[in-house]
Length: 310
Image 1 (cartoon, rainbow, N blue to C red):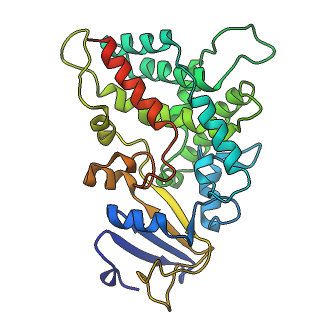
Image 2 (image 1 turned 90 degrees about the vertical axis):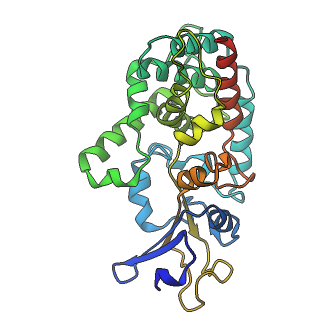
Image 3 (image 1 turned 90 degrees about the horizontal axis):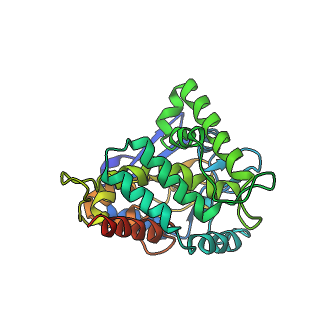
């Protein structure tokens, strides 16, 4: 099928005699259309494309020991989705300790390095999800430097798998974060759901928060944090795969539909966010449905640290 038959912002490429069928979507309207299609689903275990298995094995979206994918990969109909979603929201509804917020604000107002800011951000994430393990003394959990480095090293971008050494390092990084998290979460949480937040906070949220720095000494910019997020998206893309053969409402011909186990649909949400200015593409696929639960926490944190610096 030629790309010329598809609307602007949607492309399709085939390789290996059609065994790999890749659809790329960057137009905001069509991303929403694909995301709402009932015949496209998230790449959980029953529906994933064989070519994705190897990639996700190395990413922060998968947990090696438990063989679980993180919550965002589960469709609404997955038997574990409701319980895991409830657990996530329960922990994210907790109050961030005031001293953690003040510490981050102080670092951003000063000349602290990106690594120091990242460590403070991960300590905030830890305050929402982690407790001291049974073998440790009571008190707040401090994220060690080794885990901060590891969170930065977890894999998100598929192209990194071209380098076997980079893939191996990403796997080691994920294992380091998982090992730290596993001993410190409550029974209602699943390791990849928490470990994913560590990777996203280190790689995305930290970059956006650093954009709040101002030329004025001891003050932070009052720029709308949404603008900072649009400049530093947490995720570049999300993946969907067909659960049954589909033409996505007639977008593709009947004799060449998207096929389970063969077609991979990549929704380029970062590009759509910048094009549309809609921050729903930063935390999902441009719809209110299934926005990342960390979104309100991050926005409130940014607002709090801005107020502390004025």
